[in-house]
Image (cartoon, rainbow, N blue to C red):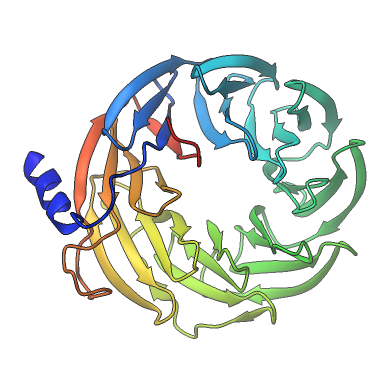
Length: 368
């Protein structure tokens, strides 16, 4: 491992010292959130949480991290101090945590078919809204007021005014709607219809379906490029990436790009030039880079079987991947100094033990 660190250091010796960003890792079976300093690569704290932590999301415009536990609550971890400052009841089967872009509100679902809207200033539940169905995903629009819920059982999207907790309307989409993406200007929403090979595009203002985009295989996860121009859609069944032109609602690629087996997550760079894909499953474990301009792979690195989550540091220097009982840290600077050489691996710098079954990782913009 020291050899890997030395090798990575040799490749990046001209870079300034790394910033001490903190990686927060939710460990589902040890009921903790591990805090890792990404300058020293050391575990600095292990914070006990309610049973079953499954999501960890930084609250925008704050030094707070929201952690959803499936046992029925959201914990607020505050910095400085790195301690739980509040625990907000959600209900049994808590899931689908979402944060408003301005940090004013959060929302989550429970097994009773409720959406619980959280007031982040008071760190309390502001409303319980009974929507029914099988709620699979929540997302706030860029205005931080409109909340969208995907109901897989009803094949519908439900639109909620978050400040008043009033239902604005609903629209039928494809089968088993799941992950969503909303354009930065708030004009349009895309939802993965996971029960069929289709993406539905919806006008957010009128709450009407604009088009159904046919794919080669069923969609799973989606990543919207930061500039909003393209939507990157993963298919776990076929191991492919399909690129959608979000302005014209067109599938750009006739032949989807291979991503490897069982793509489970992805993250794009701020300039929308590169996508990093995490391949899961027992035969997966690859972190693969994709040059989005040329639609070509630029290398892959094996990190271990059945990884679960991936995050990019705000300065885009490191990738953090949860795997096994550890956090793997990779450099985004390839071993070959010539940029974008196909097949060039990304250096694996180190792995840090964090806890039992890490399932989520978040790296906020604040430093220790």
